[in-house]
Length: 143
Image (cartoon, rainbow, N blue to C red; front, top):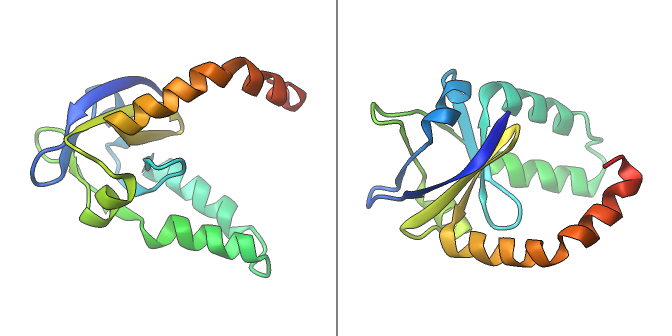
């Protein structure tokens, strides 16, 4: 399980250091893809396989299922760690997430999210305003 928030810099080659705390679960390989809300998702191979199976079980006849599968898989890339614990984010994923020099990596259960620092701050500012409202809406789902 991934937890926590870490701030790092993206270098001129698009490399970002992944917190050592996260690297253990990602040591067997990792997949980086477009996320939701304007961030990137980084999955361990095990979590990626689980997500792939769930998406693969959606009916191919459902337009939204096909669209979501394309969204997630077309932009996905296997990533490897260099000796300093960095991964390289491809140009097209950096552009998608509008990543600047400063990024925030957050642990969210089975995935790591990579956010542009300004986007993350804007998102969390709104989230803090709506936290109780969101919790109430999810109460019927067992939260």
